[in-house]
Image (cartoon, rainbow, N blue to C red; front, side, top):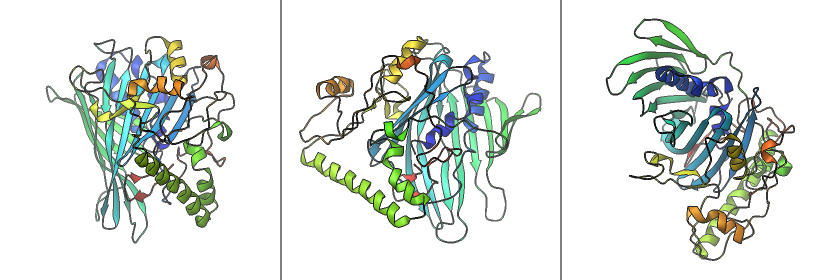
Length: 428
C-alpha cells in the first residue's frame, strides 16, 4: 500500500505545471487532470496480500527532466484500524501533498470492497490568500472492488464518488467512478462535474474511461476537449535506494523473501516468510502490552486540528509528517526533508530494531530529542535518522525504479491487490 500510493505522483507532466497556472479555475482543472492521471496504473491480477505492518516505511524520489527532484516518505501509522500516512514534496515547484489512507473491508457475496476512507491535502505553497498556508485542495478516493472472489473470473473495479475541493476558491469536482451493471454499462467509466459550491454554477462536465480517454466539456461553450489519455500515457516510476541500504522495516527489504516465494510460485515459502513477519508483529505487541508501552509512529505526528490549530480543517489526515519544512526556501527544504529519513542513495540509516521494555509516553514534539538521547532509536522502530551533510546536492545516479526482484515497476506495485479481512486491498 505504501508503495502503491506513489502512482499519484507518477505523471510529472500533470503534476509539476499545476502551480504555474494563474487562472484559479484553470488551475483547479489541472488538479482534476493530475488526480485522474494515476488511476490507470493498476494491478494486473489478484494474488495473496501482503498487509503493511505497524511501523513499516517506504521512501523514494523522482529526478525530473528540469533538474529538480520530488521526495516521498510514508509509514504505516496504525494497524487496527489500518492507516497509511504519506508525505510528498517537490520544493522547486512549490508542491506539497500530505495524506492518510484508511482502507476498510466489506464483503458483498461474490465481491469484496475496500472502502478507501481518508483524505489527501495538496498544497501549492506559492499560491493562496494566506502565504503561510498556501492554496489547499482536499482529495478523496473511490472505493475498490474485487469481483468474482468465490466463482467466475476475478475482476478489479473502481467505484462510487470521490471529491476534489478547493475551499478558498469554492471549486468542487464530483467524480463518479461507475461500476458495470449485470446487464448493461461498461467497465472503468467515469462521469462528473466541476462547479462553484457557492453559486451552484456548473463549469465543466467529465466523461470517459479512467483507464482510457477522459474528456472535459465546457458548459458555457459546449466544447469538449481531451483532458487526459491514459491509453498512451507513460508514467514515471520512482527511484528507490538499493536493498542493501534499506533498513529491516522498509517495505521492499521487509517483504523480500515473501515476494521471492510469490514470484517463484512457491506459496509454501511465501506463506512461511509472511507468517514470520506476522508472528514478529504479535510478539512486539505482546512486549509493548507487558511493558505498558504506548506505540508512536516514527516519522509522523498527530494532526494539530481544531479551532486555532496549525492544521485546522485537516483533521481527517490524523497524522502528518513530523518535521517543519520551509516552503519558501528551496535549498533549506531539501535539507529538512532529507533529515527526516533516508531517501536517496548515499544516505545511511541505522538497521538496529528493538521493542522498548519500559513505560514511556512521548509527545510528537519530543520524538527527535528522545531519539538523540537514546542512540537514535524511536519507540518500536529501527532508527533511520540520517546525516544530511551534502545530501541536498548529492546526485543519486544509482537509484533504481525496479522492485526488489529486479522487475520493472511499471505498475508501481510489488504485488497485485487482494481483499483481506481487515484493511481492504494490499499490494506491497
